[in-house]
Length: 102
Image (cartoon, rainbow, N blue to C red; front, side, top):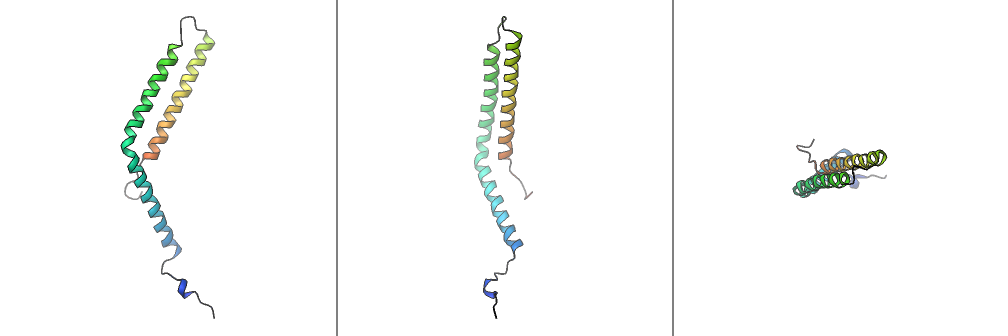
């Protein structure tokens, strides 16, 4: 007669999964808390980049700039500003720390 009594640890798969999930969540919080002090620096860098690009692209516009070039420059500025906004949102999401096991 074959038995698996020696394999039984007293914990079922649900308990093991809960422990594994808790360990994973704690590891995420540890990583995020290590990055959080750098967040303000990163956000400041993104804001400076927005201002820098705006000034440099608007510097290309002269009184003799054609409407086509003007539109192209403004579209490029809008696209890059949108990219920087998405980047800032992604960084905020990465650094978001869950509280109380939410």
